[in-house]
Structure formats: C-alpha cells, structure tokens
Length: 429
Image 1 (cartoon, helix red, strand yellow):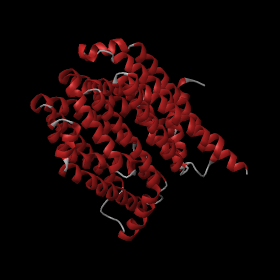
Image 2 (tube, helix red, strand yellow):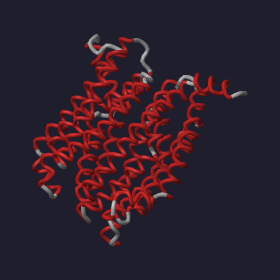
Image 3 (tube, helix red, strand yellow):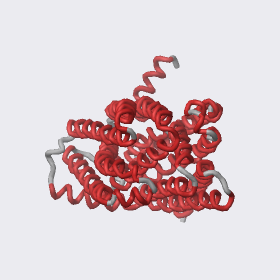
Image 4 (cartoon, one colour):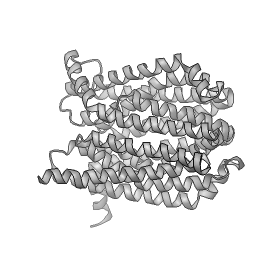
C-alpha cells in the first residue's frame, strides 16, 4: 500500500477527518491562549494572576451550569436529527434553555457582586465580577453553539472559531490589561466570548434557519433535552463547584500567590489534555450516531482509545522533562511551579481514561453513573486538599495537585468498573 492510497483512505475516513480539524483548531486556538496566559502571568505577577485565575475559572465553572448541559446534550440530539425542521427545533430549544439559565445565574452574580467580593476578601473583585456576569451570557451561548456545530459535524467551522477565540485572548486580554489593569483583562474575556458567539450563531443559521421553527415542536424537544440534561448538568456542576471550592480553599487557607501557581500549572495540564478535549465533541457525535451499528461503534471507540493514549503520553513526558524551564519562563515569583506542574501532568493519564469512558457512557445515556463517579472523586479532592494544608502544613498549590491526582484515580477506577463489570453483569443476567 503506497502513501497516496493511505492518504486517500485516511481522507475518506470521517472520524479521522473530523478529528484532524478539531485537533488543528485546538492546537492553534489553545496555543494562542497559552501564550496570552504566560504573558499575562509575567505582567501581573503571581498574586494578581491568582486573582485573574479565580475570576476566569469562576466564569468557566459557572458557564458549565449556565448552559444546563446543552453543549453535550445539543451534540447528542443534533447528531440524531433527521430533517432540517428537526434540526431547527432542537437548535432553538438548546439555545433558549442555555440563554435562560445563563440569565438566571448572571443577574444574581451582578446584583450580589459586592457581597461575593467581600467574601473573597478583596474589593478589587467587585468590578471584575460585574463584568463576569455579562461575559457569562456570551460564554454560555458560545459553549452551546459549539456543541450544536459538533452535532452537525461542522468541525472546520469550529476550528476557525477557536482560532478567532485564541487571537482575541492574545490581543484583547493582554492589550486591555495594559490599559485598564485587572478589569481590562476581564473585559477582554467578555469581548472575546461575544465575538465567537456571534460567529457561532452565523454558522448555525446558515446550516439550519433559526427563524423557521414550530413552537409546539420546540416545547416538546425542550422537555426531552431538559430530562436528558439533568444528570449531565449535575455532574458538570459538581465539577465546576468543586474545582471552584478547591481554588477557594487554596486562596483562603494559604494565599493568592499559591493560587497563581496552581492556575499556571493547570494551564499546562490543560495543554496535555487539549487533544482529548478537542475530540470530546467529535467522539460524542460519532459514538452517538453509531448506536445502531455495534461493530462500527466499537471500532470508533477503539480508535479513540489509541488516539487519546498517544496524544496524552507524548506531551505529558515532554512537559514533565521541561518543567524546570517552564518555571523559568514565569519569573522568580513562581518558585515551586515545576513540582506542581509534574504532579498535574500525572493526573492527565487518568483524566484521559475518564474522557474516553465518559463519552462512551454519555452516548449510551448512562449519565447518572458519570455524576456519581464525579461527585465521589471531587469530594475526595476537596477533603484531601484541606487535610494536607491543615494537618500536614503543605503548601496550597502542591496539596491541591496531589489531591486532584488522587481524585482522578478514583473516578477512572469507578467508571472502568461500571463500564466493564457492572454493565456486563446485568447484560449477562
């Protein structure tokens, strides 16, 4: 078999083609975001960067709840849609649910921003929290929009949107920080999410008109989506709330400089997981649409296992070996970052297992098992972080990193046992 025939075979494979486009978008988009993160970290210093990280992660975690799982549910439902009318109804329902829940969280965040800032221990959070309430609406629509586009298998368009997102993060956040300080960096996030949301809606409207829909059909679809999303949003919410609590424990029990270290290390952990993260929508879309063909379904699953394993192992080894050099990029105030990065990288092995099993179980509708696993794992992370800081006098960043590693092991094992032991046991009965 010559190279030309191999190329044509790979080109004709829809899973490979979609994966390549999705990975390309993540490489370019996330790469630009990573560069902006390093620049901001050097400009801000560890304390201010810790504050920015707190606000940014609050936005991301609240967005998880604000979409009510429509990013995942939208992909699942759109992948099963048959006709354009069905597509339009499902899209309108997903966007409507996402917008309503985003407003439900954004309005209280704006009104009680003063009280939240006081709770966080700094009045400097007041304006960033108000800006975050606006960004939350756009972030929710963007997340839902990319989920819908994934269901449509429009991965080329998603790639373009991710590149725009990366450029906006690099230019908007850094430039506005230089002009307005911390408030400017948060305004950069809001503007970034607004622009990519507009692009998402334009692409969606071109594929299936958002102006032609049956109101009764939208109501019926919305009810089905809400029921499907309940366990999805619960396990997504648990992830968001628990991670935010983890950051809060670091900030309250140690200081924001430790939170800055943890945030910086988390970025490199996300770098290792960027291909599995990029393939999340591809995996769910293809696994969901292949439910009727078991042979095709498991062929896709096996390919995803191979792709995920290789894509995590290679960057993980490189980043661990280069952790000392990476620490030097951030400056002298980030002492101890290399150790935190190394532990964070080890967590990615088990996060890769969690990724594969989560997509497989979601495609089959086993969402409650994912929720239970994540709840147990995240509770362990919170408890262990508290114990390490309070009773063993460990620093906040490294304590949280070890706790997250332990949590990932627990979740991976529980999902593996459920998938390959519990389900097989009930099938055999």
